[in-house]
Image 1 (cartoon, rainbow, N blue to C red):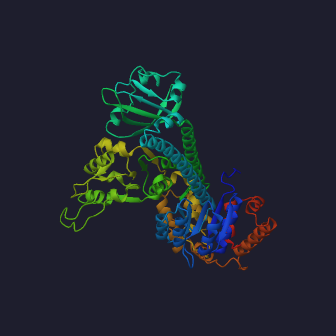
Image 2 (cartoon, one colour):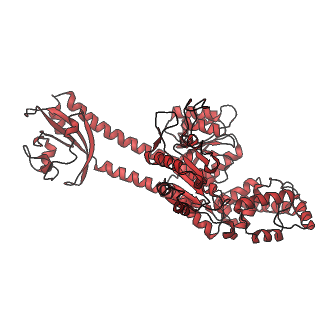
Length: 604
Protein backbone atom coordinates (compact mmCIF):
# COMPACT_ATOMS: atom_id res chain seq x y z
CA UNK A 1 0.00 0.00 0.00
CA UNK A 2 1.35 3.46 -0.92
CA UNK A 3 2.50 5.45 2.11
CA UNK A 4 0.26 8.38 3.04
CA UNK A 5 2.44 11.56 2.86
CA UNK A 6 0.04 13.24 5.31
CA UNK A 7 0.15 10.46 7.92
CA UNK A 8 0.17 11.93 11.41
CA UNK A 9 -1.83 15.06 10.49
CA UNK A 10 -4.95 15.76 12.56
CA UNK A 11 -8.44 15.62 11.07
CA UNK A 12 -11.41 16.76 13.16
CA UNK A 13 -14.79 15.17 12.35
CA UNK A 14 -17.87 17.08 13.56
CA UNK A 15 -21.04 14.97 13.04
CA UNK A 16 -24.05 14.27 15.19
CA UNK A 17 -24.60 10.79 13.67
CA UNK A 18 -22.63 8.25 15.79
CA UNK A 19 -22.43 5.62 13.01
CA UNK A 20 -21.19 8.13 10.41
CA UNK A 21 -18.74 9.57 12.97
CA UNK A 22 -17.39 6.11 13.76
CA UNK A 23 -17.14 4.95 10.12
CA UNK A 24 -15.30 8.09 9.02
CA UNK A 25 -12.95 7.91 12.00
CA UNK A 26 -12.10 4.22 11.44
CA UNK A 27 -11.49 4.67 7.71
CA UNK A 28 -9.28 7.76 8.10
CA UNK A 29 -7.39 6.26 11.04
CA UNK A 30 -6.63 3.25 8.85
CA UNK A 31 -5.15 5.71 6.33
CA UNK A 32 -2.74 7.08 8.94
CA UNK A 33 -4.50 10.26 10.12
CA UNK A 34 -5.01 11.30 13.75
CA UNK A 35 -8.76 11.71 14.30
CA UNK A 36 -10.55 14.12 16.64
CA UNK A 37 -14.25 13.20 17.05
CA UNK A 38 -16.86 15.80 17.96
CA UNK A 39 -20.59 14.85 18.23
CA UNK A 40 -21.95 18.41 17.85
CA UNK A 41 -21.04 21.96 16.87
CA UNK A 42 -20.42 23.31 20.36
CA UNK A 43 -17.98 20.60 21.43
CA UNK A 44 -16.47 20.75 17.94
CA UNK A 45 -15.58 24.44 18.41
CA UNK A 46 -14.08 23.73 21.81
CA UNK A 47 -11.98 20.85 20.44
CA UNK A 48 -10.92 22.95 17.46
CA UNK A 49 -9.51 25.62 19.78
CA UNK A 50 -7.58 23.16 21.91
CA UNK A 51 -6.50 20.56 19.34
CA UNK A 52 -5.67 22.80 16.32
CA UNK A 53 -6.57 20.22 13.62
CA UNK A 54 -5.06 20.42 10.12
CA UNK A 55 -8.44 19.69 8.45
CA UNK A 56 -12.10 19.67 9.50
CA UNK A 57 -14.87 17.40 8.16
CA UNK A 58 -18.13 19.16 9.07
CA UNK A 59 -21.72 17.88 8.84
CA UNK A 60 -24.06 20.74 7.83
CA UNK A 61 -27.29 19.30 9.24
CA UNK A 62 -26.94 19.12 13.06
CA UNK A 63 -29.32 19.98 15.90
CA UNK A 64 -28.53 23.03 17.96
CA UNK A 65 -25.68 24.88 16.31
CA UNK A 66 -25.88 23.91 12.62
CA UNK A 67 -22.92 23.35 10.33
CA UNK A 68 -23.06 26.77 8.64
CA UNK A 69 -22.76 28.59 11.97
CA UNK A 70 -19.91 26.30 13.03
CA UNK A 71 -18.18 26.90 9.68
CA UNK A 72 -18.51 30.68 10.06
CA UNK A 73 -16.94 30.59 13.52
CA UNK A 74 -14.16 28.22 12.40
CA UNK A 75 -13.22 30.52 9.51
CA UNK A 76 -13.12 33.56 11.83
CA UNK A 77 -10.74 31.72 14.15
CA UNK A 78 -8.53 30.12 11.50
CA UNK A 79 -9.21 31.23 7.89
CA UNK A 80 -6.46 28.98 6.50
CA UNK A 81 -7.66 25.70 8.02
CA UNK A 82 -9.43 23.79 5.19
CA UNK A 83 -12.99 22.61 5.89
CA UNK A 84 -14.82 19.92 3.89
CA UNK A 85 -18.56 19.94 4.50
CA UNK A 86 -20.79 16.86 4.37
CA UNK A 87 -24.41 17.34 3.32
CA UNK A 88 -27.33 15.04 2.66
CA UNK A 89 -29.30 14.70 -0.57
CA UNK A 90 -31.20 17.88 -1.34
CA UNK A 91 -28.74 19.99 0.60
CA UNK A 92 -27.07 21.65 -2.37
CA UNK A 93 -28.25 25.08 -1.22
CA UNK A 94 -26.47 24.62 2.10
CA UNK A 95 -23.40 23.31 0.25
CA UNK A 96 -23.27 26.44 -1.91
CA UNK A 97 -23.63 28.62 1.20
CA UNK A 98 -20.80 26.69 2.82
CA UNK A 99 -18.53 27.22 -0.20
CA UNK A 100 -19.27 30.95 -0.03
CA UNK A 101 -18.30 30.93 3.65
CA UNK A 102 -14.92 29.46 2.74
CA UNK A 103 -15.40 25.66 2.67
CA UNK A 104 -12.85 23.91 0.46
CA UNK A 105 -15.19 21.20 -0.88
CA UNK A 106 -18.41 19.36 -0.12
CA UNK A 107 -19.30 15.65 -0.05
CA UNK A 108 -22.86 14.35 -0.42
CA UNK A 109 -24.33 11.69 1.88
CA UNK A 110 -24.53 8.75 1.68
CA UNK A 111 -20.76 8.42 1.15
CA UNK A 112 -20.61 5.27 -0.97
CA UNK A 113 -16.88 5.51 -1.71
CA UNK A 114 -14.65 6.59 1.16
CA UNK A 115 -11.73 6.92 -1.28
CA UNK A 116 -13.43 10.01 -2.76
CA UNK A 117 -13.53 11.61 0.70
CA UNK A 118 -9.91 10.70 1.40
CA UNK A 119 -8.83 12.12 -1.98
CA UNK A 120 -10.63 15.41 -1.27
CA UNK A 121 -8.98 15.55 2.18
CA UNK A 122 -5.52 14.98 0.70
CA UNK A 123 -6.09 17.67 -1.95
CA UNK A 124 -7.20 20.13 0.74
CA UNK A 125 -4.16 19.38 2.90
CA UNK A 126 -1.80 19.66 -0.08
CA UNK A 127 -3.32 22.98 -1.13
CA UNK A 128 -3.08 24.28 2.45
CA UNK A 129 0.58 23.27 2.53
CA UNK A 130 1.34 25.01 -0.78
CA UNK A 131 -0.47 28.19 0.30
CA UNK A 132 1.54 28.27 3.54
CA UNK A 133 4.87 27.78 1.73
CA UNK A 134 4.02 30.36 -0.93
CA UNK A 135 2.99 32.89 1.69
CA UNK A 136 6.26 32.41 3.60
CA UNK A 137 8.24 32.87 0.42
CA UNK A 138 6.28 35.93 -0.71
CA UNK A 139 6.46 37.59 2.70
CA UNK A 140 10.18 36.95 2.92
CA UNK A 141 10.89 38.30 -0.56
CA UNK A 142 8.64 41.35 -0.29
CA UNK A 143 9.96 42.18 3.16
CA UNK A 144 13.60 41.91 2.07
CA UNK A 145 13.19 44.05 -1.07
CA UNK A 146 10.75 46.64 0.28
CA UNK A 147 12.68 47.12 3.52
CA UNK A 148 15.97 47.70 1.74
CA UNK A 149 14.42 49.94 -0.92
CA UNK A 150 12.55 51.97 1.71
CA UNK A 151 15.67 52.36 3.82
CA UNK A 152 17.68 53.52 0.83
CA UNK A 153 15.13 56.25 0.03
CA UNK A 154 14.44 57.20 3.66
CA UNK A 155 17.79 58.54 4.66
CA UNK A 156 20.81 59.63 2.62
CA UNK A 157 22.83 59.54 5.81
CA UNK A 158 22.30 55.76 6.23
CA UNK A 159 22.69 54.96 2.53
CA UNK A 160 26.39 54.08 2.68
CA UNK A 161 25.97 51.75 5.67
CA UNK A 162 23.04 49.92 4.08
CA UNK A 163 24.90 49.50 0.79
CA UNK A 164 27.93 48.06 2.55
CA UNK A 165 25.84 45.55 4.52
CA UNK A 166 23.56 44.55 1.66
CA UNK A 167 24.27 40.98 0.54
CA UNK A 168 23.08 41.58 -3.02
CA UNK A 169 24.33 43.84 -5.79
CA UNK A 170 23.68 47.57 -6.10
CA UNK A 171 24.87 49.53 -9.10
CA UNK A 172 24.05 52.80 -10.85
CA UNK A 173 24.36 53.40 -14.61
CA UNK A 174 23.97 56.46 -16.82
CA UNK A 175 21.55 56.95 -19.67
CA UNK A 176 24.21 55.63 -22.08
CA UNK A 177 24.73 52.43 -20.00
CA UNK A 178 28.01 53.53 -18.31
CA UNK A 179 28.50 52.24 -14.75
CA UNK A 180 28.69 55.07 -12.19
CA UNK A 181 28.71 53.03 -8.99
CA UNK A 182 29.09 49.44 -7.78
CA UNK A 183 28.73 48.37 -4.13
CA UNK A 184 31.53 46.46 -2.41
CA UNK A 185 29.78 43.11 -2.75
CA UNK A 186 29.53 43.58 -6.49
CA UNK A 187 33.14 44.78 -6.86
CA UNK A 188 34.35 41.73 -4.95
CA UNK A 189 32.22 39.41 -7.06
CA UNK A 190 33.37 40.77 -10.45
CA UNK A 191 36.93 41.42 -9.30
CA UNK A 192 36.99 45.05 -10.46
CA UNK A 193 35.42 48.45 -10.00
CA UNK A 194 34.02 48.78 -13.54
CA UNK A 195 33.24 52.49 -13.34
CA UNK A 196 32.66 54.10 -16.78
CA UNK A 197 32.43 50.66 -18.44
CA UNK A 198 29.31 49.35 -20.22
CA UNK A 199 27.00 47.56 -17.78
CA UNK A 200 25.74 45.08 -20.37
CA UNK A 201 29.33 43.99 -21.12
CA UNK A 202 30.63 43.72 -17.55
CA UNK A 203 27.57 42.26 -15.81
CA UNK A 204 25.85 40.21 -18.52
CA UNK A 205 28.58 39.54 -21.07
CA UNK A 206 26.62 41.07 -23.97
CA UNK A 207 28.00 43.13 -26.86
CA UNK A 208 24.92 45.37 -26.98
CA UNK A 209 22.37 46.74 -24.48
CA UNK A 210 20.09 44.06 -23.02
CA UNK A 211 16.77 43.75 -24.85
CA UNK A 212 14.90 43.59 -21.54
CA UNK A 213 16.55 46.71 -20.04
CA UNK A 214 13.83 48.65 -18.13
CA UNK A 215 15.26 52.19 -18.54
CA UNK A 216 12.36 53.43 -20.68
CA UNK A 217 9.84 51.97 -18.25
CA UNK A 218 11.65 53.49 -15.26
CA UNK A 219 11.20 56.93 -16.84
CA UNK A 220 7.42 56.39 -16.63
CA UNK A 221 7.25 54.67 -13.21
CA UNK A 222 9.00 55.50 -9.94
CA UNK A 223 9.86 51.85 -9.29
CA UNK A 224 10.08 48.81 -11.59
CA UNK A 225 10.39 45.24 -10.27
CA UNK A 226 11.23 42.15 -12.31
CA UNK A 227 13.22 38.92 -12.27
CA UNK A 228 16.15 38.00 -14.53
CA UNK A 229 18.45 35.05 -15.11
CA UNK A 230 22.14 35.95 -15.56
CA UNK A 231 23.97 33.46 -17.80
CA UNK A 232 27.28 34.88 -16.52
CA UNK A 233 26.89 33.32 -13.07
CA UNK A 234 23.90 31.01 -13.71
CA UNK A 235 21.79 32.62 -10.98
CA UNK A 236 18.38 34.28 -10.65
CA UNK A 237 17.98 37.82 -9.34
CA UNK A 238 15.02 39.85 -8.13
CA UNK A 239 15.62 43.31 -9.59
CA UNK A 240 14.38 46.69 -8.40
CA UNK A 241 15.07 49.62 -10.73
CA UNK A 242 14.49 53.30 -10.11
CA UNK A 243 15.59 56.74 -11.34
CA UNK A 244 18.04 58.66 -9.11
CA UNK A 245 19.59 62.11 -9.27
CA UNK A 246 22.99 62.32 -10.94
CA UNK A 247 25.71 64.72 -12.03
CA UNK A 248 25.39 63.22 -15.50
CA UNK A 249 24.42 65.60 -18.30
CA UNK A 250 20.96 64.08 -18.37
CA UNK A 251 20.48 65.02 -14.72
CA UNK A 252 19.55 61.51 -13.69
CA UNK A 253 20.85 57.93 -13.68
CA UNK A 254 19.36 54.50 -13.06
CA UNK A 255 19.82 52.53 -9.87
CA UNK A 256 19.57 48.72 -9.87
CA UNK A 257 19.25 46.57 -6.77
CA UNK A 258 19.73 42.83 -7.36
CA UNK A 259 18.81 40.23 -4.71
CA UNK A 260 19.89 36.65 -5.34
CA UNK A 261 16.72 34.50 -5.43
CA UNK A 262 18.23 31.33 -6.88
CA UNK A 263 17.20 29.31 -3.83
CA UNK A 264 13.68 30.72 -3.92
CA UNK A 265 13.47 29.85 -7.62
CA UNK A 266 14.50 26.31 -6.80
CA UNK A 267 11.69 26.25 -4.23
CA UNK A 268 9.25 27.53 -6.84
CA UNK A 269 10.39 24.75 -9.16
CA UNK A 270 9.81 22.25 -6.39
CA UNK A 271 6.31 23.63 -5.79
CA UNK A 272 5.62 23.46 -9.52
CA UNK A 273 6.83 19.86 -9.49
CA UNK A 274 4.40 19.16 -6.65
CA UNK A 275 1.59 20.67 -8.73
CA UNK A 276 2.52 18.44 -11.66
CA UNK A 277 2.65 15.44 -9.33
CA UNK A 278 -0.78 16.32 -7.95
CA UNK A 279 -2.11 16.61 -11.49
CA UNK A 280 -0.74 13.17 -12.32
CA UNK A 281 -2.24 11.84 -9.09
CA UNK A 282 -5.55 13.39 -10.11
CA UNK A 283 -5.34 11.56 -13.46
CA UNK A 284 -4.56 8.33 -11.63
CA UNK A 285 -7.51 8.78 -9.28
CA UNK A 286 -9.77 9.50 -12.24
CA UNK A 287 -8.53 6.30 -13.84
CA UNK A 288 -9.57 4.39 -10.72
CA UNK A 289 -13.14 5.41 -11.51
CA UNK A 290 -12.87 2.92 -14.34
CA UNK A 291 -14.30 0.01 -12.46
CA UNK A 292 -14.89 -3.38 -14.03
CA UNK A 293 -18.44 -2.32 -14.80
CA UNK A 294 -17.66 1.03 -16.43
CA UNK A 295 -16.52 4.61 -15.87
CA UNK A 296 -18.43 6.66 -13.33
CA UNK A 297 -22.08 6.68 -14.37
CA UNK A 298 -21.37 4.99 -17.72
CA UNK A 299 -21.85 1.20 -17.76
CA UNK A 300 -19.73 -1.04 -19.98
CA UNK A 301 -16.62 -3.21 -20.07
CA UNK A 302 -16.43 -4.18 -23.76
CA UNK A 303 -13.33 -3.32 -25.76
CA UNK A 304 -15.29 -0.67 -27.68
CA UNK A 305 -16.28 1.09 -24.44
CA UNK A 306 -12.76 0.81 -23.00
CA UNK A 307 -11.60 2.89 -25.97
CA UNK A 308 -14.35 5.43 -25.25
CA UNK A 309 -13.27 5.61 -21.59
CA UNK A 310 -9.69 6.34 -22.65
CA UNK A 311 -10.91 9.21 -24.82
CA UNK A 312 -13.11 10.56 -21.98
CA UNK A 313 -10.16 10.67 -19.57
CA UNK A 314 -7.97 12.41 -22.15
CA UNK A 315 -10.72 14.94 -22.91
CA UNK A 316 -11.26 15.67 -19.21
CA UNK A 317 -7.63 16.75 -18.86
CA UNK A 318 -7.96 19.21 -21.74
CA UNK A 319 -10.04 22.34 -22.27
CA UNK A 320 -10.32 21.73 -26.02
CA UNK A 321 -13.70 21.38 -27.71
CA UNK A 322 -15.11 17.86 -28.08
CA UNK A 323 -17.53 16.31 -30.55
CA UNK A 324 -19.28 13.01 -29.85
CA UNK A 325 -20.50 10.96 -32.81
CA UNK A 326 -23.04 8.17 -32.44
CA UNK A 327 -26.53 6.93 -33.22
CA UNK A 328 -29.49 8.12 -31.17
CA UNK A 329 -29.69 6.50 -27.77
CA UNK A 330 -26.01 5.51 -27.50
CA UNK A 331 -25.37 7.72 -24.46
CA UNK A 332 -23.72 10.79 -25.96
CA UNK A 333 -25.07 13.13 -23.27
CA UNK A 334 -23.81 10.82 -20.49
CA UNK A 335 -20.34 10.97 -22.03
CA UNK A 336 -20.52 14.78 -22.23
CA UNK A 337 -21.58 15.05 -18.57
CA UNK A 338 -18.78 12.72 -17.48
CA UNK A 339 -16.15 14.77 -19.34
CA UNK A 340 -17.52 17.95 -17.73
CA UNK A 341 -17.59 16.48 -14.21
CA UNK A 342 -14.01 15.18 -14.45
CA UNK A 343 -12.66 18.39 -15.98
CA UNK A 344 -11.49 21.55 -14.14
CA UNK A 345 -14.82 23.12 -15.17
CA UNK A 346 -16.75 20.43 -13.29
CA UNK A 347 -17.76 22.75 -10.45
CA UNK A 348 -19.44 25.13 -12.91
CA UNK A 349 -22.61 24.75 -14.96
CA UNK A 350 -23.29 22.13 -17.60
CA UNK A 351 -25.79 23.70 -20.04
CA UNK A 352 -27.60 21.44 -22.50
CA UNK A 353 -28.86 22.80 -25.82
CA UNK A 354 -30.84 20.78 -28.36
CA UNK A 355 -29.93 22.59 -31.58
CA UNK A 356 -32.63 20.80 -33.56
CA UNK A 357 -35.44 21.92 -31.25
CA UNK A 358 -34.92 25.71 -31.53
CA UNK A 359 -36.80 27.58 -34.32
CA UNK A 360 -34.57 29.55 -36.70
CA UNK A 361 -36.14 32.87 -35.72
CA UNK A 362 -35.34 32.35 -32.04
CA UNK A 363 -31.96 30.63 -32.14
CA UNK A 364 -29.82 33.81 -31.97
CA UNK A 365 -31.69 35.18 -28.96
CA UNK A 366 -31.51 31.78 -27.24
CA UNK A 367 -27.73 31.61 -27.55
CA UNK A 368 -26.80 35.28 -27.03
CA UNK A 369 -29.72 36.52 -24.94
CA UNK A 370 -31.33 39.93 -25.37
CA UNK A 371 -32.01 43.22 -23.62
CA UNK A 372 -35.40 44.54 -22.65
CA UNK A 373 -37.04 46.29 -25.60
CA UNK A 374 -34.75 44.71 -28.21
CA UNK A 375 -37.81 43.54 -30.16
CA UNK A 376 -41.55 43.16 -29.77
CA UNK A 377 -42.24 40.91 -26.79
CA UNK A 378 -38.85 41.48 -25.14
CA UNK A 379 -40.36 42.65 -21.82
CA UNK A 380 -37.24 41.94 -19.78
CA UNK A 381 -33.56 41.05 -20.10
CA UNK A 382 -32.99 37.41 -20.95
CA UNK A 383 -29.84 35.40 -20.31
CA UNK A 384 -28.56 33.36 -23.26
CA UNK A 385 -26.91 29.96 -23.30
CA UNK A 386 -23.43 31.50 -23.62
CA UNK A 387 -23.91 33.54 -20.45
CA UNK A 388 -25.50 30.63 -18.59
CA UNK A 389 -22.56 28.39 -19.47
CA UNK A 390 -19.83 30.96 -18.79
CA UNK A 391 -16.81 29.26 -17.15
CA UNK A 392 -18.59 25.95 -17.66
CA UNK A 393 -19.54 23.60 -20.48
CA UNK A 394 -22.07 24.10 -23.29
CA UNK A 395 -23.39 20.75 -24.55
CA UNK A 396 -24.74 21.27 -28.07
CA UNK A 397 -26.77 18.18 -28.96
CA UNK A 398 -27.75 17.59 -32.60
CA UNK A 399 -25.21 20.19 -33.74
CA UNK A 400 -25.66 18.95 -37.29
CA UNK A 401 -29.04 20.74 -37.30
CA UNK A 402 -27.42 24.15 -36.70
CA UNK A 403 -27.81 26.57 -39.61
CA UNK A 404 -24.79 28.07 -41.38
CA UNK A 405 -25.67 31.64 -40.36
CA UNK A 406 -25.69 30.67 -36.70
CA UNK A 407 -22.46 28.74 -37.21
CA UNK A 408 -20.76 31.97 -38.31
CA UNK A 409 -22.02 33.90 -35.27
CA UNK A 410 -20.99 31.21 -32.83
CA UNK A 411 -17.60 30.95 -34.50
CA UNK A 412 -16.99 34.67 -33.92
CA UNK A 413 -17.94 34.32 -30.26
CA UNK A 414 -15.61 31.32 -29.87
CA UNK A 415 -12.63 32.93 -31.60
CA UNK A 416 -13.06 36.41 -30.11
CA UNK A 417 -14.01 35.22 -26.65
CA UNK A 418 -16.94 37.63 -26.49
CA UNK A 419 -20.40 38.31 -27.92
CA UNK A 420 -23.09 40.99 -27.85
CA UNK A 421 -26.67 40.26 -26.68
CA UNK A 422 -29.44 41.40 -29.04
CA UNK A 423 -30.30 45.03 -28.37
CA UNK A 424 -27.10 45.73 -26.44
CA UNK A 425 -23.97 47.72 -27.29
CA UNK A 426 -21.90 46.10 -24.56
CA UNK A 427 -19.88 42.99 -25.37
CA UNK A 428 -19.79 40.13 -22.87
CA UNK A 429 -17.04 37.59 -22.32
CA UNK A 430 -17.67 33.99 -23.31
CA UNK A 431 -15.40 31.56 -21.50
CA UNK A 432 -17.03 28.29 -22.43
CA UNK A 433 -16.04 24.83 -23.52
CA UNK A 434 -18.19 23.28 -26.23
CA UNK A 435 -19.00 19.59 -26.24
CA UNK A 436 -21.08 18.81 -29.31
CA UNK A 437 -22.94 15.67 -30.31
CA UNK A 438 -24.49 14.47 -33.54
CA UNK A 439 -25.80 11.34 -35.23
CA UNK A 440 -24.87 12.75 -38.62
CA UNK A 441 -21.70 12.35 -40.67
CA UNK A 442 -20.45 15.94 -40.61
CA UNK A 443 -17.79 15.28 -43.24
CA UNK A 444 -20.58 14.36 -45.66
CA UNK A 445 -22.42 17.52 -44.63
CA UNK A 446 -19.24 19.48 -45.41
CA UNK A 447 -19.11 17.95 -48.88
CA UNK A 448 -22.77 18.87 -49.45
CA UNK A 449 -22.14 22.45 -48.30
CA UNK A 450 -24.49 22.17 -45.32
CA UNK A 451 -21.74 22.74 -42.75
CA UNK A 452 -18.98 25.35 -42.62
CA UNK A 453 -15.38 24.11 -42.64
CA UNK A 454 -14.12 26.77 -40.22
CA UNK A 455 -16.82 25.93 -37.67
CA UNK A 456 -16.22 22.20 -38.14
CA UNK A 457 -12.51 22.55 -37.41
CA UNK A 458 -13.25 24.55 -34.23
CA UNK A 459 -15.44 21.80 -32.74
CA UNK A 460 -13.79 18.72 -34.26
CA UNK A 461 -10.69 18.82 -32.01
CA UNK A 462 -11.31 15.80 -29.80
CA UNK A 463 -13.67 13.39 -31.61
CA UNK A 464 -15.25 10.52 -29.65
CA UNK A 465 -17.17 7.79 -31.46
CA UNK A 466 -19.93 6.00 -29.52
CA UNK A 467 -20.52 2.38 -30.62
CA UNK A 468 -24.01 1.13 -31.31
CA UNK A 469 -25.38 -1.33 -28.75
CA UNK A 470 -25.31 -4.14 -31.30
CA UNK A 471 -21.52 -3.63 -31.52
CA UNK A 472 -21.01 -4.00 -27.75
CA UNK A 473 -23.16 -7.05 -26.95
CA UNK A 474 -20.80 -7.96 -24.09
CA UNK A 475 -22.20 -4.99 -22.19
CA UNK A 476 -25.84 -6.10 -22.42
CA UNK A 477 -25.90 -8.19 -19.18
CA UNK A 478 -24.31 -5.32 -17.25
CA UNK A 479 -26.72 -2.78 -18.72
CA UNK A 480 -29.76 -4.99 -18.09
CA UNK A 481 -28.72 -5.55 -14.47
CA UNK A 482 -28.05 -1.79 -14.10
CA UNK A 483 -31.55 -0.92 -15.30
CA UNK A 484 -33.13 -3.65 -13.16
CA UNK A 485 -31.52 -2.07 -10.10
CA UNK A 486 -32.56 1.39 -11.30
CA UNK A 487 -36.24 0.42 -11.51
CA UNK A 488 -36.31 -1.72 -8.34
CA UNK A 489 -36.88 -0.47 -4.83
CA UNK A 490 -34.81 -1.54 -1.80
CA UNK A 491 -37.26 -4.17 -0.57
CA UNK A 492 -38.31 -5.91 -3.78
CA UNK A 493 -36.13 -8.32 -5.75
CA UNK A 494 -36.68 -7.80 -9.48
CA UNK A 495 -35.64 -10.55 -11.90
CA UNK A 496 -35.89 -11.48 -15.55
CA UNK A 497 -35.85 -15.20 -16.51
CA UNK A 498 -32.76 -16.49 -18.29
CA UNK A 499 -34.52 -17.44 -21.52
CA UNK A 500 -35.90 -13.88 -21.77
CA UNK A 501 -32.41 -12.51 -21.18
CA UNK A 502 -31.12 -14.71 -23.99
CA UNK A 503 -33.70 -13.22 -26.35
CA UNK A 504 -32.73 -9.71 -25.25
CA UNK A 505 -29.04 -10.42 -25.92
CA UNK A 506 -29.88 -11.80 -29.38
CA UNK A 507 -31.86 -8.66 -30.29
CA UNK A 508 -29.98 -5.89 -32.19
CA UNK A 509 -31.51 -2.91 -30.32
CA UNK A 510 -31.76 -0.35 -33.13
CA UNK A 511 -32.72 2.26 -30.51
CA UNK A 512 -29.55 1.43 -28.57
CA UNK A 513 -29.25 1.94 -24.79
CA UNK A 514 -32.31 4.19 -24.61
CA UNK A 515 -34.48 1.45 -26.16
CA UNK A 516 -32.99 -1.14 -23.80
CA UNK A 517 -33.74 1.04 -20.76
CA UNK A 518 -37.35 1.52 -21.83
CA UNK A 519 -37.71 -2.22 -22.59
CA UNK A 520 -36.44 -3.26 -19.15
CA UNK A 521 -38.79 -0.80 -17.43
CA UNK A 522 -41.70 -2.01 -19.57
CA UNK A 523 -40.94 -5.66 -18.81
CA UNK A 524 -40.62 -5.14 -15.07
CA UNK A 525 -43.88 -3.17 -15.04
CA UNK A 526 -46.04 -5.11 -17.50
CA UNK A 527 -44.12 -8.40 -17.92
CA UNK A 528 -43.97 -7.87 -21.67
CA UNK A 529 -41.69 -6.58 -24.40
CA UNK A 530 -43.07 -5.48 -27.71
CA UNK A 531 -40.40 -7.31 -29.75
CA UNK A 532 -40.37 -10.57 -27.66
CA UNK A 533 -43.27 -13.01 -27.34
CA UNK A 534 -43.93 -13.78 -23.66
CA UNK A 535 -45.63 -17.06 -22.76
CA UNK A 536 -48.34 -17.05 -20.04
CA UNK A 537 -46.20 -19.20 -17.75
CA UNK A 538 -43.42 -16.61 -18.08
CA UNK A 539 -45.71 -13.92 -16.71
CA UNK A 540 -46.56 -16.10 -13.68
CA UNK A 541 -42.88 -16.77 -13.03
CA UNK A 542 -41.98 -13.11 -13.26
CA UNK A 543 -44.84 -12.15 -10.97
CA UNK A 544 -43.66 -14.67 -8.36
CA UNK A 545 -40.04 -13.53 -8.64
CA UNK A 546 -40.90 -9.86 -8.36
CA UNK A 547 -43.02 -10.34 -5.22
CA UNK A 548 -40.20 -11.95 -3.22
CA UNK A 549 -39.41 -9.32 -0.58
CA UNK A 550 -38.72 -8.86 3.10
CA UNK A 551 -36.24 -7.59 5.57
CA UNK A 552 -32.78 -9.05 6.14
CA UNK A 553 -34.00 -10.71 9.33
CA UNK A 554 -36.65 -12.77 7.48
CA UNK A 555 -36.01 -16.54 7.47
CA UNK A 556 -38.72 -17.50 4.97
CA UNK A 557 -36.78 -16.66 1.80
CA UNK A 558 -33.60 -18.00 0.30
CA UNK A 559 -32.27 -14.49 -0.14
CA UNK A 560 -33.01 -13.61 3.46
CA UNK A 561 -31.25 -16.70 4.72
CA UNK A 562 -28.25 -16.08 2.46
CA UNK A 563 -28.01 -12.49 3.71
CA UNK A 564 -28.21 -13.69 7.33
CA UNK A 565 -25.39 -16.15 6.68
CA UNK A 566 -23.28 -13.45 4.96
CA UNK A 567 -23.96 -11.02 7.82
CA UNK A 568 -22.91 -13.59 10.43
CA UNK A 569 -19.67 -14.48 8.57
CA UNK A 570 -18.68 -10.80 8.23
CA UNK A 571 -19.60 -10.06 11.85
CA UNK A 572 -17.47 -12.96 13.15
CA UNK A 573 -14.54 -11.92 10.96
CA UNK A 574 -14.82 -8.30 12.16
CA UNK A 575 -14.86 -9.37 15.78
CA UNK A 576 -11.92 -11.69 15.16
CA UNK A 577 -9.93 -8.76 13.72
CA UNK A 578 -11.19 -6.32 16.40
CA UNK A 579 -13.15 -4.39 13.73
CA UNK A 580 -9.99 -3.57 11.75
CA UNK A 581 -11.47 -3.10 8.27
CA UNK A 582 -8.28 -3.63 6.25
CA UNK A 583 -7.42 -6.95 7.94
CA UNK A 584 -11.03 -8.11 7.72
CA UNK A 585 -11.24 -7.30 3.98
CA UNK A 586 -7.99 -9.19 3.30
CA UNK A 587 -9.22 -12.25 5.21
CA UNK A 588 -12.55 -12.23 3.34
CA UNK A 589 -10.78 -11.75 0.00
CA UNK A 590 -12.61 -8.51 -0.90
CA UNK A 591 -11.52 -4.86 -1.13
CA UNK A 592 -12.22 -2.30 1.62
CA UNK A 593 -14.86 -0.45 -0.36
CA UNK A 594 -16.87 -3.68 -0.84
CA UNK A 595 -16.57 -4.39 2.89
CA UNK A 596 -17.80 -0.89 3.82
CA UNK A 597 -20.72 -1.29 1.41
CA UNK A 598 -21.72 -4.66 2.89
CA UNK A 599 -21.44 -3.28 6.45
CA UNK A 600 -23.81 -0.48 5.47
CA UNK A 601 -26.29 -2.73 3.60
CA UNK A 602 -26.32 -5.46 6.29
CA UNK A 603 -26.54 -2.82 9.05
CA UNK A 604 -23.57 -4.18 11.01
